[in-house]
Amino acid sequence: MSDGRRHVKLVFWLGMTGAFLLACLYLFCYLLPPSCRPVAGIVMNGTFLLAFALAAGLATAVLRRYKEDEQPHRVWLYFALGLWTWLVGELIWGIYHLTTNSATRVTVADLFWVTAYGLFSLALYFQYRLIRPAGKKRAIAVVLAAWFLVVFISHLGAYVTNGFSLRHGFFEKYLLFYYVICNLAITVTSLSFIRAFGTGILMRPWLGLLVMLLADSFYTWLYHLDLYTY
Image (tube, rainbow, N blue to C red; front, top):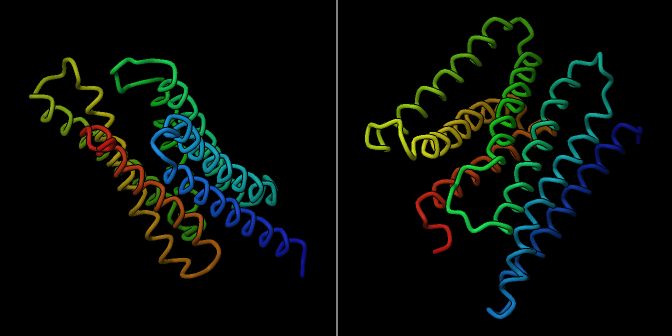
């Protein structure tokens, strides 16, 4: 077996093993009696950080397999940076909830999550360029059109749901729509890559990103509708 294939198998099994252990830890904490719930809650939230750290670490390991002049390097660079940025946002969000009782739902963490979406879109752009090298202008047009729709729909949705007002509460609702629309846009793009790669190993990162963003969409809406705790 070549060093490259051995490295790929190692990264794959490390990821699978880590994901399985995190799922077991989460399930164990969930089944603890009510008296242990405060500590279990901290551990369960910590599994989110561990999951993103695992994903970002594995993406970085794949990135290191490519030289800077190789085309896949840019795809994995922005993919890994997006995951690390998202991890920082999750960390700030966790610290915020443990140290403050404020009711506001807009924090510094949002800055990192917004940035992460930009990095993911760059990874998607360069992946598209790899699949269709001759479609540079089309790829740029698609990315710009997608971002225009994200901003426009987010603004319109926030404006309408905020009582046709740009005052208090508008930005919070804007972020709500922004996250969900970004998730849907990246999900649709990921589906096209999954279809292009079939069942190959290059399909798996985009499938993982798709599942992560769909889960985040559900969480975002449930949290903002005060249904998550229920």
